[in-house]
Amino acid sequence: MFIRNLGEIRKSDRNVRSDGWASARLLLKDDNMGFSFHVTTMFAGQELKMHYQNHLEAVLILKGTGTIEDLATGEIHKLQPGVMYALNDHDRHIVRPETDILTACVFNPPVTGKEVHDENGAYPAEADMVAAD
Image (cartoon, rainbow, N blue to C red):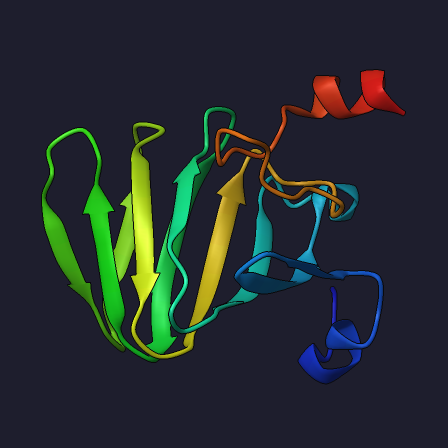
């Protein structure tokens, strides 16, 4: 059993910040759960272009508003509390937060904890991270 406190995670090296977002990573690969679990804030006014080529992700909006654009179809969907989106096909997308957006996210395979988006908006595959160390 794991008991973790979000406030403590936000003060630790499990809280990863990058351009336009901050992610408190409560469960990581080393926890052996088969997925990672994050509480992520995407900051208002950003345009976050992402393409998780090596991971699947599901995101639940807890607070805030914005939009997500599916770059394959051009469809734009409203993000607001209670909306979930799942990137089940490694979907290229852009999130545009109108306000700060607080989310709960899961990744499969789980991330190790140090990942930030590369030039394509993806997290590297774990094998790529090991090779870089």
